[in-house]
Image (cartoon, rainbow, N blue to C red; front, side, top):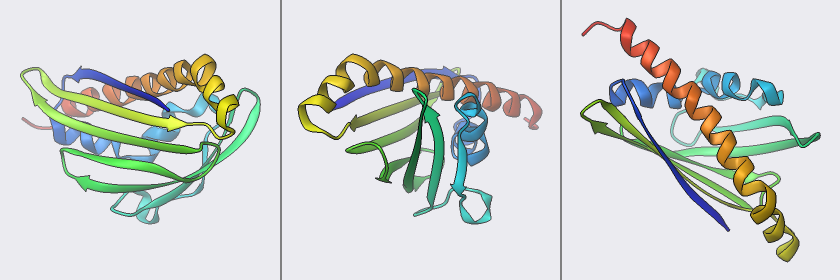
Length: 156
């Protein structure tokens, strides 16, 4: 099992960071270089409690499909998502947003493991742990940029 936590301070109010992080379009923009698309989009164009979505992307030159569910939505404090079906043996992601003197602390906790027993554990340790950390960091760069931009354009 790979388990890691990423934290960053974002210069925007928690409700702005929460809204950006929950935007399916943000996810698509942040993963565009991997050709990520939504095969099954959320009804109404936004994630709500129990929303499922199916993603298609290409990583390591291999096409993948991952279906996930969004749950435990608690505005503006956080939400979770997990894989329902896809390439992982399991995948779980918790998003937490806490007030900070400079805006919001955004914390992502990720837990996943690959299938295929010992071979999967080896792949996780040698390749996927660092790769997934980088993907989430890239996504978080987009969350930060968009949340800070949105926060500047909203009235005080």
